[in-house]
Image (cartoon, rainbow, N blue to C red; front, side, top):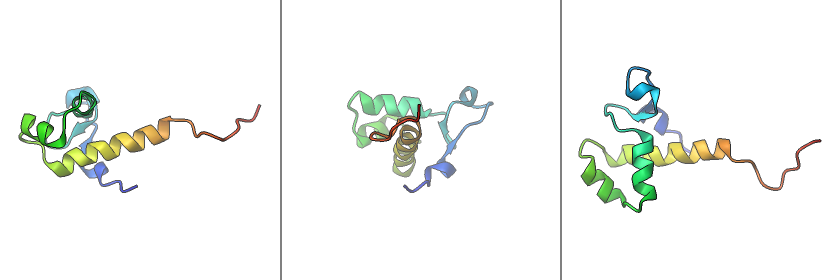
Length: 81
């Protein structure tokens, strides 16, 4: 997976309490993912957040995918007892 998101997403304790945020904005990853979960399309989100670029939005999706990949257990692997 391409990790271009690492340059576009920051965690800074001085910005939004350290919550992952799109660099150069105060838009949190959680806000964007909530919009997607509610059924918003990319064009809707870009209209709602005019400072957000499509590249940044796609970085949020890549970040979420990478985070989920790290957090979800792999199926089919046995766990040693």
